[in-house]
Image (cartoon, rainbow over all chains, first blue to last red; front, side, top):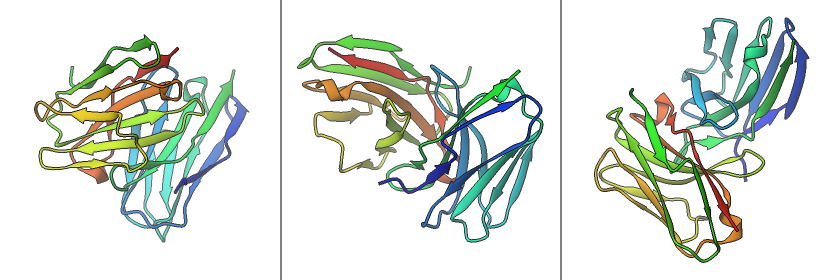
Length: 109
Length: 112
């Protein structure tokens, strides 16, 4: 059973467009992480959000943690081809973080 | 370079064999993990281990066993390999759960 549901599962957009992907759960998490994974590599940590309502920015990427700490969103402004990849959210859990199934983003030139 | 490194990158073996995957981290992290990523890219926790405690995901068959010679290493041993064990296995480490993980680049295991 997955604790975290990510949507959409697949997203294909043109370079320059904006997009938002979502991570939802019925469980409360003490923290939530976003990772990006490229083919043949392990996930790379982008950000950790801890406080309900928290917003963090990483260049063109904006991450928000829901007030109830059950959900999160990732917004990308003016997407670039280099943003292509699998975006994973994860929530702290035992014995290790529980991951969503990911959103596969393709940015076309 | 500071990192989590795992070997081998690729492993092809026959059903019934026993194999090991090695993992080392030089980040000074206290906790290490093994994850399995299936063909649909879903990451599933198998074990977490720090120098005091091993926590096992109850769904993991006992053919899988982690072994840690020291704080910087957590190796994965798999006995009597089955076709369904084919997947990519990732090692990871963290200083604190809330800080997120550093992952290795993965080992693609193919059982034939």
